[in-house]
Image (cartoon, rainbow, N blue to C red):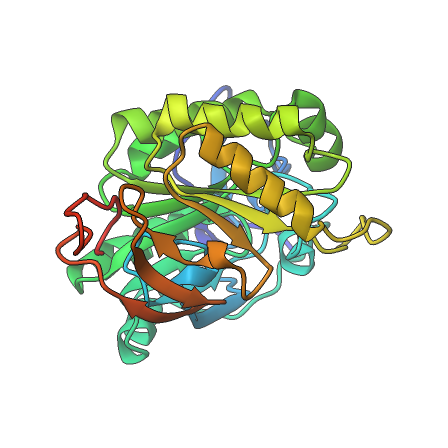
Length: 344
């Protein structure tokens, strides 16, 4: 079978290097891709000197979720987000909780259901969602579908959010700025070794993405760190993460400290202890962060939102359920302190 560029969606953010080679500018790998080959994500291919998306019409997930599941706790709290994913990722994390869909395109075989951007948005409206979330895998590598869907979503009054590993290029950040309203970035650790050995990625581009979004865009951002026992849970490393968020992003950026459960190629490691999560929480407080949450441990106090100024319970949560939200026009009803977020 002879592949033709017309069979696929033409990719965004790439340049021709020669008649045989293209360079992708979507993520920090900046892959140079020879004719007939794919990039590291395995879902963008050079066909006849044109870079195309192989996963544009291959959804592997499409369903409404609580926005808190992303997790986004300061973004339209209590709302639903229509969550979609296409196969593929530009990382290969050995602890990936969604490895069945992020790591499956191994030999140009990409399975999934056909959904048009309009069908996605119509489904979001029908299920009474307030936003569309590009999640579960890595939205950067299905950027074409994200962009086409997001523009239609904005026209229908819906917001758009990413759940991302943050390994985006500066060009990709500029590309999403007109239509991306919120993002949760995984700051997986604070060492190059962790990113290289456990994620098959690099650390510095993730830091730069966080800096850029915080300092140069209006995109609402929250950050998640999965605490993996023995890998990124030392007090020194957690302090580095918390201080980086506070000093180079903002003390108003929520930090989600998430409990690790054995997954994928790390099934031999124990789950994160509650004590370790609580110690990380205290480290975040000492760094000056105003909003710190403990995830994957239902029932703890740190699932809820409290006023950083007076301590009033503002958003009472149990798991992904919002039981009450007393924030008034983005402020604490007791002391008037401004509570950072989007659509509070």
